[in-house]
Length: 204
Image 1 (cartoon, one colour):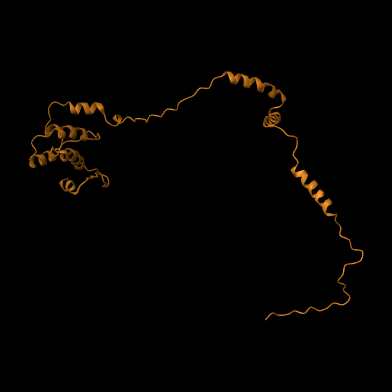
Image 2: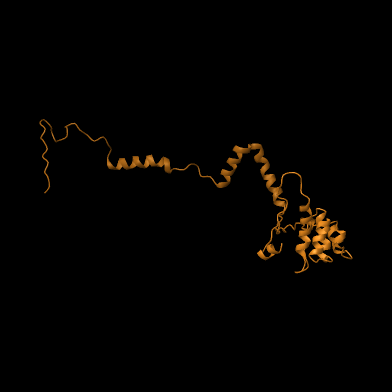
């Protein structure tokens, strides 16, 4: 059920308009004319101009009248110049020299060595020579006679050879030779041996 609200009647209030009340507005036709006039200022455009005229006006603002006189001459000069089409070529990748990492002179001497030198001519210590003889090594292989003297001289090695040619001995004998001479200072790590497989680690 809706609630009905009763308004209190106020005494002395007249519901009708006053006798002298008049709406302050014009008639319907005059009102439409006034609206069109007010909108005409927004809709009305200025003097019609082309794009070239606008460009000339902007150039006049930026460069002035003197530079505008020179512009047609520049345009005529540019018309006589032919356009050059340049084909962009792909850049070649730079080939960095990898041969500089290796010593060519030392490598050529090692490869062109005539006869393999023995263990007794490699400037090894007596203790190490006795251990080599006890292990049954009589004559060094080609990679051993090439790598051991270079490693003892403090040169870096990067060599490869077939399986079973004595690469492990060629790399480990110089290491053992350096380990025999301990420094009188405090003990430090002097050698780190990295092997790719467990079997090779056991062999070393």
